[in-house]
Picture 1 (cartoon, rainbow, N blue to C red):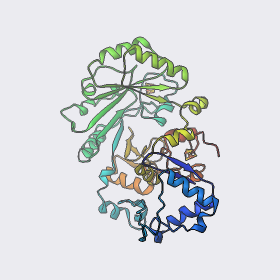
Picture 2: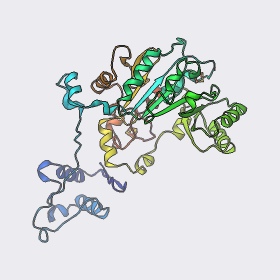
Picture 3: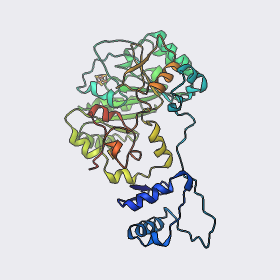
Length: 388
Ligand code: SF4
Ligand code: SF4
């Protein structure tokens, strides 16, 4: 048993049966968070030690019945969501849709404008499955102008704040004028993800946030040019690393170029498990030292904070809740509200929690960060070094 104090991250592990019995009893509804311990209970060493430990660590309190004759009531936190989709299983999707303003569930929109690009990044097909990044395929498909207008029109009426845009090479897309600052809702944040080898000055793109993707092999002079022509613009760098050597080189390049706003994205290429085990996988200490709040623990029981609220719009009109999952709608046939509804009921990504082994049998199931796309591409259910 793990006892975890969300107030300060303090944690205690117990194997004692007595300890388990006491905690289970405290959680019985009729006990309202407090139970009677008498002197004969305390004469048991296991019970005594357990009570002492939780009192010393501020996780429980022992009160004398003589001093406090009225049984104390402790309101134990329980998870109860206003909108728990499992409660709605018996009603139709239409009713579900009418019952709630589900447009609030859409948090970010990801638009892929085209699939063509003249660069030859060796891991192109891996990047976008792990983090938001440009990618190309043989289809050379482009998002139909009317489809893009349809997305932008619909999200205008949604509370969604973040719109991420990428391609292939987005500069090969012919309707970038639709993102002109005078055409879009400026209360929303538009982020353009562009590979540094493809970057070019473009009025429609540069008035928004520019996210420059950089990978190896590194073309230093090109990076220097991009840094210079984007000076004064709203730029963030995204560095893709596959091993420690690349990480170290990026670190020194960023410091040499005086770039502070950057994010590092580890990329699994099928042969760098060791790099992931050493640098990405969490140890028991990492999990326990990350002071997890009660809110996060409850959240991890019901939804996936990495995936929840995202929709991906592909050039061929397909809509997904996650690039690695099945299609849940089509731009030509479905409104965004229908797609949100489908995802809430079908759950291809938004509510995927750690319910598979080994996490389902693990004490840290809801303390751990939610499943990510790394688990998916690495074909495993956990990203940890915890030994069982
Ligand atoms: S620049 Fe982007 S789309 Fe082009 S090959 Fe590289 S990763 Fe793929
Ligand atoms: S097995 Fe799963 S829940 Fe347990 S520590 Fe590893 S990732 Fe977390």
